Image 1 (cartoon, rainbow, N blue to C red):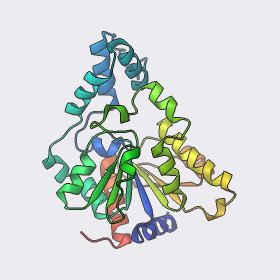
Image 2 (image 1 turned 120 degrees about the vertical axis):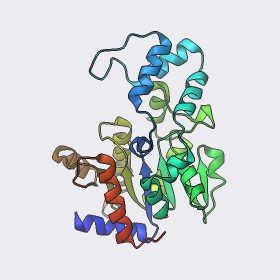
Image 3 (image 1 turned 90 degrees about the vertical axis):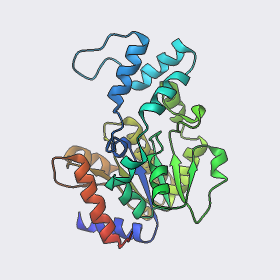
Length: 274
């Protein structure tokens, strides 16, 4: 663990690290879980709730059915936009968002649809460019941090990856943002935070990253990559190691506090200042 943290801190110090941000970071400022989205779609579509358990359908399957029944995702996107929004005050009070901005990552990828990262950059006066489609790629500036909305955002319905079909289309890994990610990731360290390792989308991304290096013939030259998890899991740790991904963790009962402690330690090791 100490050697891994030192390698990660060095990459952050030299701005050669990419941050990949998942739903856990947005939930820390009060955004609803996927379970709430599932419950809303079930209510609107007249589907009975399952008592206990994880429900009969994933949110991707329900979103697919929603589009078939309603003709579009417009009303659902509008509901999500309203319910996935928090005040600037909440973002400003978020230690996680302050730490993320303060570490000055040149590129931040996120699968979240909300604008919390963009708002945090605005609050702390840091220059950034949002990238959600091929057009946005042409607007990237070297002096500005990139916030890449890997699954789209609420400003553009067509960019959102939400339904089963959307996810299946991304399995080819050849959309403009997929091509950008492969190019960005080849020469940089990557840190994933805010994810559950049961999320098949992130697992596919980790596998694809490993596969790209394996197929290149230069696996030994690959920069190290890391996933933060609140608790150690020997099974997942072994599987990730197979993909050359190192799991990092912090002891503690509260996952959000564990992530905050981890980021504070990383920021201190990297020598970042506010």
